[in-house]
Length: 276
Image (tube, rainbow, N blue to C red):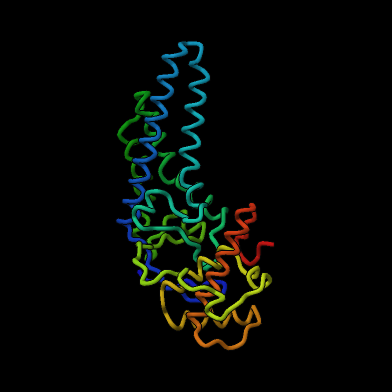
C-alpha cells in the first residue's frame, strides 16, 4: 500500500494508501453526519409548519428540498476542496484526498470524483426508493439496482490502489495520514537568530501548497528529502551553501509561514508558486 508521490519540486514523498475498510468507515461516518443533518432540517421545517400552518407549507418545503440538494451534492465537494482535503468522516479516520500527479488538488478533480458518486450510489438507490414507495419495485428491478450499486461499491477491492471510479477519472488517491506526535515544534527556531534573513522577494517565491509540502518534509525527517528540497529552494532563491539543510529549511519554513499569515490578515492568499 506504499506509493510514491513526487511533488513539483522533485521530492519523493512516500505515502500509504487508505484501505477499503478505512474508506468504508469514513463514508459511513459521513453518511451518519448527513443523515443527522437531514433529521435536524426536517425537525426545523416541521416546527416551522406548526408555527405558520398551511400558509408556510410551500416555502418550507422549498427550503427543505434546497437544503437536501445542497447537502447531497456539496457536502463532500466543499469539505474536500478545503485545506485539509477531507470530509469529517475522513478526518476521523485519518484520511485525505491528494492528486496522483503530486500537484495541488484542484477543484475540477474534487468535483469530478464526487459527482461520480451520484451515478455509483445515489441514483440507483433513489430509483429503488421511489419504485418501492409507489409499490412498483419487482424482484428483478430490485436486484438490478442493488447489483449496480454493489458493482461500484466494491470496485476499490479489485484494483491495487483501492480507487473508486471517481478516483480513476479525477486522478486522485485517498491516503492514510494518521496523527503524529511531533518530536519538535516546527516553529521553534527563529529565522534571524539562526543566522538566516530572507528578503520579501525570496519569501514571495512560494505559496501555501509549498509551505504544506515543506512541513511534510520537515516532519518526515528523511535526510535525502531534506537535502533535495533544500537544494531546490536554495537554487530558486539564489542562496549558496549552508551549514545544515534542516536548520535552513526550518528557518525558511518559519519565515514563509509568518509572511503568509500576515498577508492573510489583509485578505491576500497565495495558493502556490504559480498563483500571481
